[in-house]
Length: 381
Image (cartoon, rainbow, N blue to C red; front, side, top):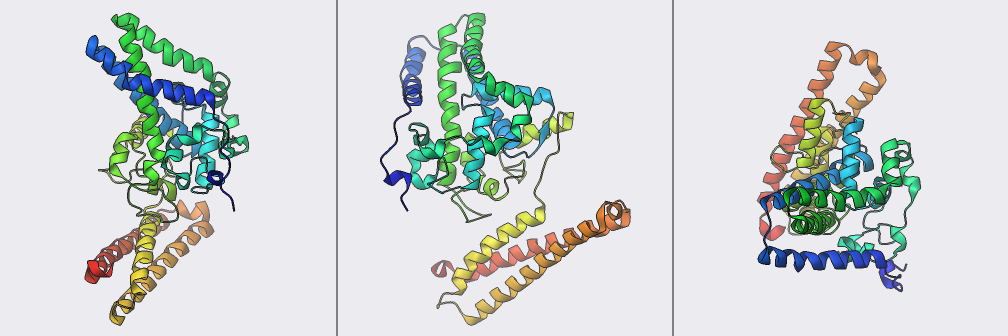
């Protein structure tokens, strides 16, 4: 089968190419030159940081987690703010962004359908997919019928370019006029902010599919990398996200850097966000163990592995399957008993403690698997 990379390249999108070339050139020439000759005020740097965060968080929190994946719901003031500052990030309207992103998740790594497949090369995944009229970049609005019923989404889509000009030019100019530093504000809070914001987002499509670990799934190229999370407002835990895209979190550990999750939690505490969706802990543990078992199975099939080690592996895997079966049986009981039974305090407690016991069993088994892996030694890996 022929892929896009093997065919004649489609025509260049001149508007995108000129924009990216011009703004990236200004960022590496005019921005440092003005800083050297004139200097930037503290207000300009503050505006750069605040607007960079507002735009980036609006993309990750609003465009990505709320609208593309429906992982939580928000009151209209939050949705309006995310729509405005998301538009300021200049990454297209919510409707277009979400349509492409849902296709990316459905066909990840498929060079024929994934808009920015890493299999087409790092450059293509990072920015190249926007520089030419690739067939995979065509917008399929059938993917976002649900969003067409959101009045704020449709308002932003209809008035997208007016919003882009008002925010990206109007806000820096107004701030520059107030502080007496229009050019400096335009260069920092306008040009440099946009360039940095774009590349931070593009890293999710390129670096987050290249450099890192895959603890939850090896079915695709998405990886977890804490360093990338620092640059992408918490989106660097990408292997987890692709494994559990309905979870509003990317960094599930308390110590993992995920400011988008923290913002959602803070807004939930105020009542402006509700309906947060979280993946059950058991399913997360199950996914990690499935990956570890798959890796250990490759070792178990090696001729250099002792028979006793294979027996331990088979015993552990059988226990894992039994634990999973018990968890599924509890889920079936919840469905069969219905809401009436769940309102009974004893039934709720019994189900909850049973699930906790199974979670603990998986946790202990994971420790045993790690010990089992160490007994093999590095030479057997």
